Amino acid sequence: MANQETLLKGPVDVNGRLYAWPQSPVVVICVDGSEPAYHERAIADGRMPFLESMLQDGADLRAQCVMPSFTNPNNLSIATGAPPAVHGICGNYFFDAASGAEVMMNDPALLRAPTIFAEFADRGAKVAVVTAKDKLRLLLGHNLQGICFSAEKADQLTVADNGIDNILERVEMGLPPVYSAGLSELVLAAGVNILAQDRPDLMYLSLTDYIQHKHAPGSPVANDFYAMLDGYLADLDMLGAVVVITADHGMNAKSDGHGCPQVIYLQQILDQLPAGVLGGGTSRVVLPITDPYPAHHGALGSCATLYLPPASDLEAVTCRLIREDGIIEVLRRDEACGRFELPADRIGDLVVIADRNTALGTSPERHDLSALSEPLRSHGGLSEQTVPFLVNRPVNSLPAGHRLRNFDAYWVATALTEQ
Ligand code: ZN
Ligand code: ZN
Image (cartoon, rainbow, N blue to C red):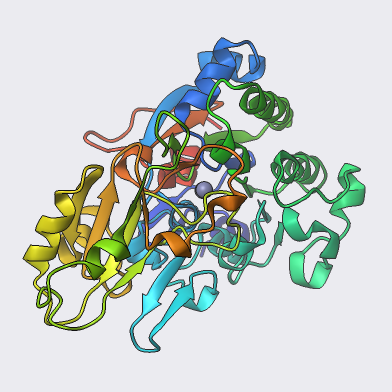
């Protein structure tokens, strides 16, 4: 009979994948919106000396994120090690046909798979999850016995709810504004402090893409952000952790040469279709990027899903949309779900994807662009799927034919690195 220790510290099966018990603490950092050019330019400009040296001995890889290339689906994929078809979170919003309402996907009741965090904690591992924005906290912390909090609400922590309570005092920082680089810095400072003091087996640090939405790779503000990140990476490495740095998605300019947002308004196009194409019913455009933080992107990203009346001529709608300069894909629900591993019951009749420099909106009056202080930068499409996958240890060769995904982070860290 296996003794209790062996049983507790054996491999853990989560969503059909085996994760070895970590010998050293494993820290995965999701640098929100980290198009690879950000760290590449910062290294070239001499602003990330630690990362530069880390990549000489470790692994400098690229991975594909899940589609749509938005924050919630990808954070939940990293947390569960599985695509949205398994965990159910395919955007920040979905349309619930039963209630006729658009529902924000931040409720753990919508999550269909256990997280790696909760499963390891159940087996006795110490786990810490820190996210910048509070919108992810309940999903990432679902059923988790451990530390879980957001930097956004770091002044309201209790041991009962968050597994920790005095983080601002511990890191000697004040509460940063929600729209700031400081929110990500607090996540990183907390991560270093918790690693040093509590020594968790697994840690997840999820930042915010506030800087990436406003500043291009190599710009002074972006380089300052990555220089800040570099200092914390050095600290985590020095404390003996296996560190994987990846991203939920990349980021591209969605504006024209004058800095004006380049947007296709889908509801406007649907409303102008000849009578009969929609069978007389009403259509609905759902933008899964929509979230409570509009100053980032004005709810404009490069992916949308359309709910059309049952009598609609899908072929005619597709033909009309694909004619639009800037739209690169119009997929039927089944096609999109097969190709991108999405949950069919949370996707509309059609999925529309825009190109690298184009965003999709509903109608102009439904987007408040006054909060955008810089030319629009956003994500959501295929052009934001390539993300960094950087490890501070050499990575053993991947199984033949394996296409590296950002949600392989804990599997690579526990199974494919020397600990
Ligand atoms: Zn994001
Ligand atoms: Zn974003």
